[in-house]
Image (cartoon, rainbow over all chains, first blue to last red; front, side):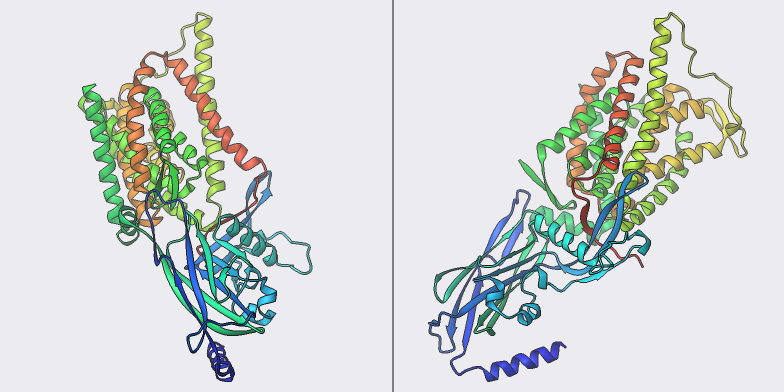
Length: 265
Length: 309
């Protein structure tokens, strides 16, 4: 599948006209450090579309799409249902290796940029995101949806999952949000919220013209914990037991100290 | 001013967390309880994930109990042998509790189980305490001298079970079964709910085991230090949700609050104090009851996923 796609792209590249375009892109910050007072930031990506000869493109038909994806994480969405008068978690779906962060930005509405099959192939837009949805809980927990088009309730839970990720500020699609200071130059901004997941973020820049992909570029940036926060987090994962013993020793030391101060006063 | 909690992976208001520490410390100093039953809910209601609140709380209780236990040790007001036997049950209870906690978290029912357990446990304990203290106050008003709590030498069938043991410091000769069982139950409940269990342990030791009142608090504190230390280490190793930054903030706040609380507690009458604590416990139970009874504003939630094998 993958190989076929690569082959197809290679053929398309060969078939492209001699005056092919290329795109260059740079991110404003390659590293975003989460420190104790981090409240969110913004990553700005600058890019330019050129001809192979290095001259700026002059045509008016180039549209740009930027997709930013955070590290893949397995997440669960649960729905609370009333059970014997108590609100408890009922139906649930696990989203295997879903992007923990996803932003789709473009210079024009997605439908105007590329045909449907290309939007699907490149996962442009929340509705085109490919998600591996599993049902981990017992099927008995699922209350029937009564909807013939969505008998298992996968579509409904996917919609709610998408909504919650949007509300958390980590999933967003913003058609038309890329601005173009000049015809061949573009600038895309992606907000990184305070709760942004840690890891490598992949940025893909796709240039479409006449309904075809004419140029692409990819780059990355990293969101990382810095300094003390980083060390604490690493220790809690890599040396979990030693971290536990350390936290207890610290607790007993503080308890002893508090007791000693108490007696004086 | 906010501070980033590295394990909870969230930014919290430093004054809010510190304030929770101070307020709970005051209450714990005033009533002579650990205050975990109040601290964990307050953290959960402030948006800290329940897993992190419960696990971090364990090390905070270890710290505050250690202060108290040291003081009791110096005054020779604790029964080390009794504490050790309680502890043998407590360790097993903590281990089972952390396992149950991890399994519940994976199944998605942790929040509901925590909420329901709080409602039942706090509702029952608070209700019993309120009835006892109000009854005492009414009896006093009528001029009747209330019957003393402890009737020396009168033990029920529970104490006459096999494996008889002597506890010279407490002047007791009872079966080891209820002692180990009590330790086990409180260790289990403590590591699932993030409470030290002092508010259950103290009455259980007085009424069930008939331990002399003045020895009860120190003994319960020393066993709480050990059980909660074990719970914290197990949580760090198994659920990896001990946030040391959060725990230290709470410990420091708690230590400061406890000083003022103890001074205030000495000025109040015992029964007034017990009635006030009972009302507080019932209020927390009520808040949890609302949580599970009222339709949530958003019925859907997202959490890190773990696929059970």
